[in-house]
Length: 70
Image 1 (cartoon, rainbow, N blue to C red):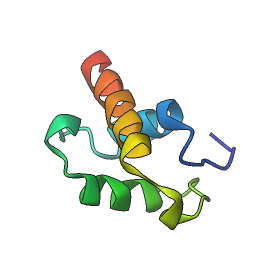
Image 2 (cartoon, rainbow, N blue to C red):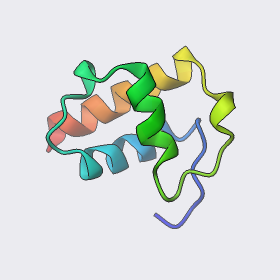
Image 3 (cartoon, rainbow, N blue to C red):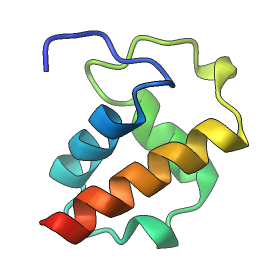
């Protein structure tokens, strides 16, 4: 995925998170840890301070869907 990711790219981030952390059940991850996992992604280029609960929840749900599909 060569594009630069932002907080609005929940589906792409979810796929990357399941690839990077295949052993984690996304529904057990705290938002503080989820925020860190997202900002540590190589392709993530958005301002870390622009996240909010709704954006993190969307990412968590996208990650959960990708987790269930694996």
